[in-house]
Image 1 (cartoon, each protein chain N blue to C red):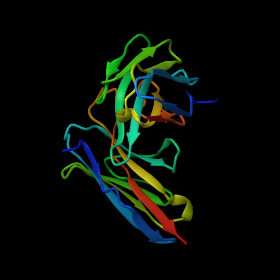
Image 2 (image 1 turned 90 degrees about the vertical axis):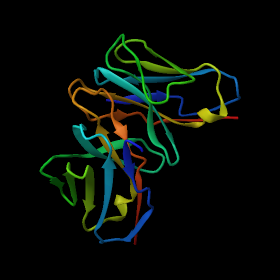
Image 3 (image 1 turned 90 degrees about the horizontal axis):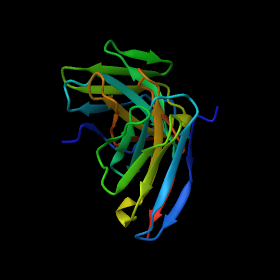
Image 4 (image 1 turned 180 degrees about the vertical axis):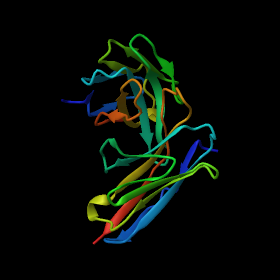
Length: 112
Length: 111
């Protein structure tokens, strides 16, 4: 099984550009998450989706939108990228009733 | 105050040594606790859950102190392959959908 797959792995954007980070899991998990990781800040939750059809804001949602396309896929969109959004983005999923989170390999995003 | 706090380190210890680090959490209602491991430029992966009575997995021992609101991780007979960042993770309350991560403690085992 592939687990959690994120694309792209690397991206450089200019300020003001938009892009969508894709995430898919093949473990039939109900809940999916988007985190960003910055030096000294740890992992911070951007948005999450407890189940198909629902999304909720996390700790740092400003500047982002999400779509839970179906049970497998959860995308993160930056409408107008800013240098403050330079970070490593991780998608994760958990099974209903379980707390172990499985992570994708991350997307390293640089906004110049 | 951060919800989960860790000493970022770095901790540099010789191979074979015993090393321990703590993590404190602010929400007394927190229900579940975990240690994740993250290798350089990789994704976090679950190392072990932390149970109220303490638990051991090989060379790793995790303990929870609810009264003082901290959890600890002890690594005995450390190996070079133990070099990584260790993330303290807390589930804030029963039914919470999200996990809260500490910033991580960086550990380097030296030959």
